[in-house]
Image (cartoon, rainbow, N blue to C red):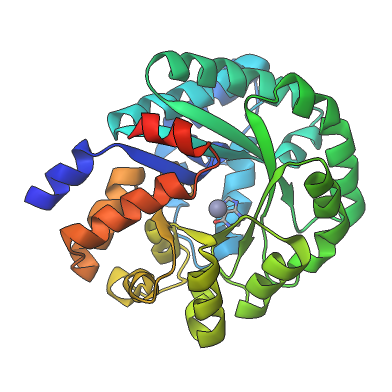
Amino acid sequence: PNLAKKIAGAPKAELHIHIEGSLEPEVIFNLAKRNGVKLSYESIEALKRAYEFTDLQSFLDIYYAGASVLLTEEDFYTMTAAYVDRALADNVVHTEIFFDPQTHTERGVAISTAVAGIERALAEGEQRGLTSKLILCFLRHLSEADALATYEAALPLFDTYAHRLIGVGLDSSERGHPPSKFERVFAKARARGLKLVAHAGEEGPPAYIHEALDVLKVDRVDHGVRSIEDPALVARLADSRVALTVCPLSNIKLRVFDDMKQHTLKQLLAQGVAVTVNSDDPAYFGGYVNANYFATVEALDLTEQEVYTILRNGFEASFVSPIERQALI
Ligand code: HPA
Ligand code: ZN
């Protein structure tokens, strides 16, 4: 309880949060009503009852259905402003947020509409003590051509929002969609000086983590927990200090591990990997950043020193400059 209190009060960086995954069921229903979008769940309770996931895909199906209520700039603002409130309540002082433009362009919503709404809420957050960056993620179940077209369409936004939109990522269904499928679009983003991240080794094999590092040349690996199956890879991550953005509650809800006591975060940390703790899709997985820390500390008996290392890793692995970073802590 004492350690929990210290964690709650500590300034934190969050490096793995899908903004569409912060849509609480109540907000989904409000936006559906506002926009006249028909949901296939008749009530908030019915929607919540569907949050019984068996794997990543069973979650993604519901996550994309939830995101279907987002149509206007105001909707993206509403969603992001709610997340900003939650983050501040958890003493998050810096956050690096993912968004999935292809989920929205498919419904006729321009990338600029999404970014404008997200930006307005993040700019307000800055005034309240939350700094932030935004990372555009490609959906890996879609084609390389679709990712390339999305990247080209977003190019003007990387200029207009250069202070915020600083990188690209890779998410959605991992199995069967290796990082190498997106080598060319990541090479373009790299040539432009953008930061690079990719989900790898959540459900996919350690080989996908090697690919993310070798082929995409990512700056961080999202999840990466299956690295534990490959000792050479663990050593490589530790030596390179390429961070893992681990999301403990997500891993349990999506059955990556049977229960929190089986989570490998503590072992990775002990082997020198730059592990961070994050919420992934907090509205779906049972909590925001602090809840992720609490559940992990409790199940794995993390020491105060271990928690401190994780907290510090979050700032060190962030995409703010070292001097800006110092100002946050
Ligand atoms: N994995 C892959 N794609 C995602 C996730 C995740 O945990 N959350 C939202 N999109
Ligand atoms: Zn994720």
